[in-house]
Length: 491
View 1: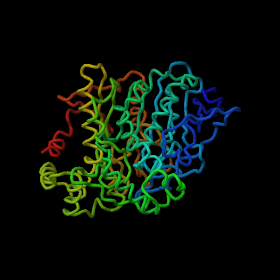
View 2: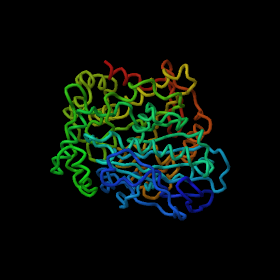
View 3: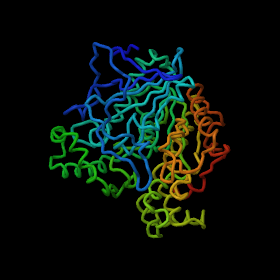
View 4: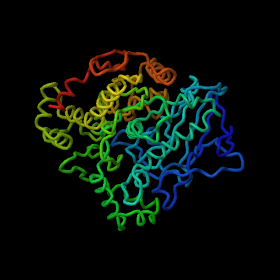
């Protein structure tokens, strides 16, 4: 296969062809780690794209507490400078003008890669979609607010990858005029921001936001706290020249020293509720920047029990106290007592752990998801773009039944990777039970249908009915299923 940078040699599998480790930007080294992505130099010979390549610098992460999360995080840092790359999976006998899906992985802006087992896109390729998965800068090089450098460099990487797709994807059978950008968690936050990013205009036609938020950006003041903490840990000045002289190894070494920072200010709560010191940096949140979506079709949703991931693996779902619930509310809302009272009134039988999980999940993902859905539906009324919403509610029995429909739970079903052995077991994502046999193919079919036509197969979302597909063993179209929660947060 020939790209603008040179020829690449892929690997054939039954029904699919995969091309690993194709550069979309130059290696980010030295000072260039803190600059926008640059074009990659052409390669004169055929580039071997039969094996996965290096990943962004990151600490290896295999677990959240007692939960095995290695299929989500992948192998960690596989060293090599040339890691701004992407993987392309296409049908073995690719036709022409196939829909293209570009996936942005999650990992708290500090971990993850295209090598994570969850993101094997062979099922998409077998269904006639060209799937592209993207590596981008993480942690300090990708998202630290550095005076003298542009913010959100990892996001700029994703936009550069989208430009590569426009220039090259037709060689793999894809239609550059029919690109769906989708992501999960941190990747979904990036996708939500790209919806309103002028440099990305015209680079994609549709978007899927899975468990993201358009309320997740730090203000420059908040981000500066992480900057100063990193500078102290490195014993350098908090400026571009000083950071540029530090090795990637040192950046990775100090990451534990950046956990637990208080990023709340008198005017802004911590939008990440303390789970990560890195996010996008902006003066205003993405949904407030201007009408969302540039006329782009949008599918947006999350899981029914997002917050369980941050509590159950640490034993906190069963040990949380009323004080813990109040503390979580205080960290995420300016009237915490009223918020907790509203949640308790709505579900008087809930345990303190369940209330804490519900508040945390809404603060991190649910509120921002609803904000995006409403903003996009409102902005698209006259623009012809469509909005669709979903909530994934199938419950895993992992961790003695506590994990439930938690954050990340939809991913094995979207990618149809439920067969992976490492996803099964009492401390694995899917638990010890057997998921419904038709759930993965049906969910992937909805995502594929959206990529083909802009319609996943259910009613559109508007701000009156708020039609939302509840995805579990049975699929049920509901209307405004989180009305009480929305009212609690705006009380």
